[in-house]
Amino acid sequence: MKHWDSIEQHCIFDHGWQIDKDEMLVLTRQQFNAYQYSGHSFRDPTVRTLMIPSVHGCCLIFEGKHFRIEG
Image (cartoon, rainbow, N blue to C red):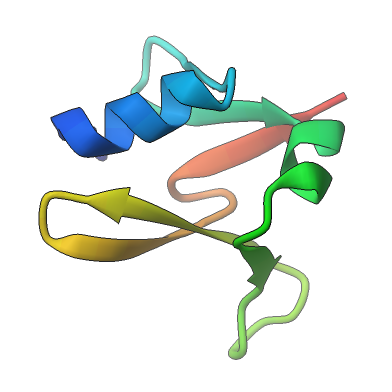
């Protein structure tokens, strides 16, 4: 599983998102839709994506692997 670095954590908590016990990022549909850097995978348009800052620059994360949307 993904271990979130300090810059990623700052972004996550600043947006009111949560990290569950399995290190999966959890956000609501409303939070996903309100986030400017959200989209869909080019390879599989059914998979949603988020771009978040990290210690290495921009980080593209994928629904089902790094985050899930509840509600």
